[in-house]
Amino acid sequence: MSTTTELFTSPEDVATFRRPLTPEQADKLPHIHRLLLGYYGEPKPRELRDPLSQLIYSLLAARTKTPTSNQVMRELERSFPGAGPGHWEPVRDASVSDIERAIAIVTFPDQKAPRLKDLLLQITARTGALSLDFLARYRTDKIRAWLEQFEGIGPQVSAAVVNFSTLRRRALVIDANHLRVIQRLCVVPRADAATTEERLMRFVPETWDAEMLDEDHSLVKLHAQTLCTFDSPKCEPCPLLKICPTGQRNTNELKLEP
Image (cartoon, rainbow, N blue to C red):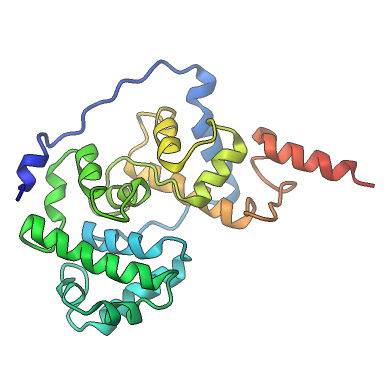
């Protein structure tokens, strides 16, 4: 059995090489951020979860609305006495059928229940305890690689764990909402979420800390849910219209209609 100390080598993040950006490129994400901030105002500060609680939340939240995801976390605590932040053993030790009943309101509970139980069992087997607090000692890239070894944990979830939890590391969570806005703005070439995050991080100012990246994600997600929706985007009132090729094309097409 490999130990956690074999997986990580440094307590600090290693600076990544960046090619020099033009002034326009360097201001691309900050400009979008300023426009969204001016339109929506500052997002409500996030209540940080411990890394394991955030991992459980992110796993269950896939394709599920935020209010429902928050509700199901409360339902886990109600259904399994003693379960909660720092104490998820009752969920780990429960039957898959009981877990599935507790998370019934999320999408695909039949898939997520066995995956959650297996995840909690594997973490315990690999680390000797059901906690991810030890991850705070290690590099962000190593943390994410370690998390992504588990089934169902991809770049979006690992980014959420390192950025939204008490770990508070630099990462950009590219969910379906964020991806849609970025693709319509043509900020980077179309690609999957993992590639998009990698490309966008090259444009992220060095001055943006974890909190700023979280705020940016919250604003983009809110915009995607409010105006830049999947099937009926409201382009004319959009604060990003002047810099959005997709929105400009859509509004021009509307004007050409008889």
